[in-house]
Amino acid sequence: MRKVAMVMAVVALAGCGEGKPVEAPKARAVASQSLPQSGAIAAQEWDLRVGPPDHKLQAITDLTAWLLEHGFNFYIVKVDGKDEVLLGPFSSKAEAEAKQALLAEKMARAKKTDTVSEVIEHKAAQ
Image (cartoon, rainbow, N blue to C red; front, side, top):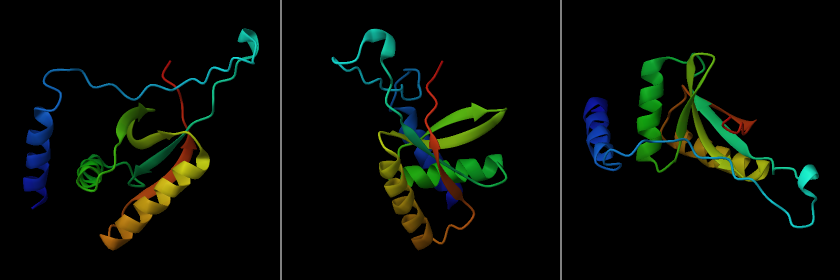
């Protein structure tokens, strides 16, 4: 059943971009009129790292298929040679924690216990 779901997800997603490259969401900078240009500070953003504790490739593909099926938007980044699945970025830590609670609730309902999640600070692409 999972293979059928994965094939359907791949086929459905194959036509979505129609050849357009996929990029991770860009960090949104907050510019304030009252702050001088040299002292401008970008707003802090948060991500939700989701994945199997052991970073197995098969588990990550199952996880991303599950996230798609349940309406969670995610992106994948490579950190120290390992793929990480991130949800976000969120504008506040409270927003990220609320999404983490929703994810935990849906995973508990689905009896999916092989996944952990953690709120982390968003790292802007450099």
